[in-house]
Image (tube, rainbow, N blue to C red; front, side, top):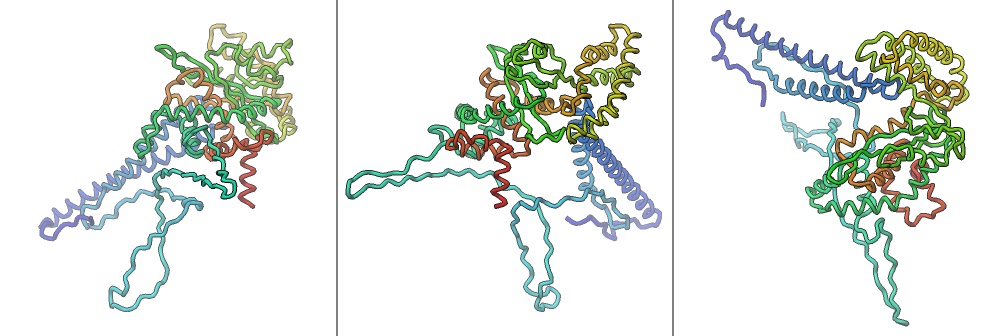
Length: 527
């Protein structure tokens, strides 16, 4: 529909009325421009805040960052939608010469080059519409629109022809092909999609079943659950290889998070533990990996069992259950404790943010100086990191200790800031261990990042169905988190592994690990 125009007979008959109508329209247009300009400024403000928070996610920690980022993204979404709705509704009401306001939109990036292109040619006239003469092509204008093809299902019929020998009458037939699941009826790609949707995108099986039914494929929850259990058993050798790789490191990150578990008439609070090997901060050559374990409670016996054969450095929080691991009489040897400065900073940050306590603000400022140096040397070799720490970081840490001890002497033991100081001073050797080892990180953020997806996914799946379900979840999180750490598409990797693992030699299973698989895929693509 074109713009609405006023017919000459509907216009006011005198000049004063025309001026009044023009003034009223200009005022309405100015108000619309003001609203659009305000919306544009608000959108720009939200984008800037979101960019800053995303930048800080892997650097200096913002304790409220995750929730604030989610809220800002929602506000940005609403602001953009409102601005676009206002722009679409603001059609010119007359043909009087008032220039409409057009909201400046961000420049759209081109669509990915790897996507297939489908040409739809608009029919052109066969002759000149003015004189009827013959037309000659000068060129063409292409407008690209992103579209999606709905998911397609298919049934693969594997035919095994049967032959008989005319001489001896013996019947010959090729052997049956391998199925991912014995007597199963799903292919590896479908199975990988089910696994990744459940554990990577946190979609419970009942929701998946409903989605498939809407697409005309009936897969009930019990069938999907059978597939998940069988696939976990098939992939268990890879989980064991990843576990060995993680605990062969000289330093690992450790942490845990809650997971509700269904019990008789209620839910109990179980635990998912993770241990992460990530040597990238000190330019280590070994690939990163994460292993997960499930337990019914948070008793110290669980990390003791997980780390039974480990005697390296453990970067973790001050959980009391780790205490026995640091005992000098432990076999095969004591684990060296490296404390997390993010946890130490958090206690001060809460006081600085909520109560604006001057001592807490000063403590946060001093600790942030240490984090600023660490960001600068992240990814450098261990020797270079150690040299910078000795030269620049150590004087700051020494001054921080002196300052905290002096201020602690003047505080009551019940003061919140005093408790934050005590948290660090009672573990000071563990907090300062990074000054003498370039491989130790300043924080335990690697483990916390590994657990972030689980914490977000709890809102979707609510609880684990049983202890066995928690163990299966730990196994699948091990595979998916390790694939993501190595920048490998988890679903594509799982599909390929499930198609090949049964016939793969046991001594070469390490070739299917995400970091080796990715290298082999790149080599095959290059060839």
